[in-house]
Amino acid sequence: MEFANTNDQDPSSGEAPGYQPSPLQDLCYKVTGCAITVLNTIGPGLDSKIYENCMMIELAKQGLRFEYQRKVDVVYSGQKVGVVTLGVIINEMLLVDCRSVAFFNETDFSENISYLKLTQLPMVLMQNFKFGKLQWKKIAYDPNR
Image (tube, rainbow, N blue to C red):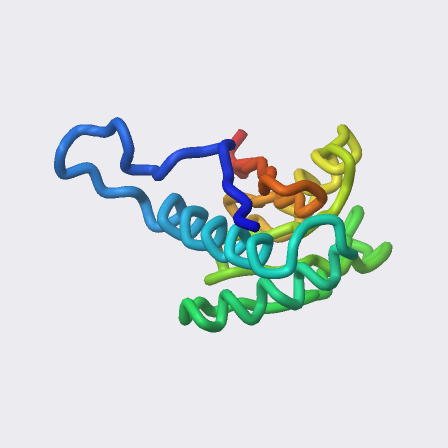
């Protein structure tokens, strides 16, 4: 059984001839392709850690550099107050958050925005493997805002 994605289209579709996606757009497109491959291969609804592990295999096949479960210090008023563990960081540009949930909620979004602030990464790609069609959301972060 094949699972398709209906959330986003190819970043170059509908654009003027000669359009070139940015490196970040291109990376999101490749990572989403990896996620669709994973979902088509093992199916929906499993534990999110399984999807993270499968994603790392697919990312490696694509030749992408990634780091899994980076630990990041949380600093407040110059003092370390804790540590958070992130999902997958790809090419030092994109945080990928693999989930298997009924829906993304406000807490999921808030948590990922905080991760972007802590890391200064420009974007997080939230992926949901719960259903037969991959669901994803991108959150961009501009530290100058």
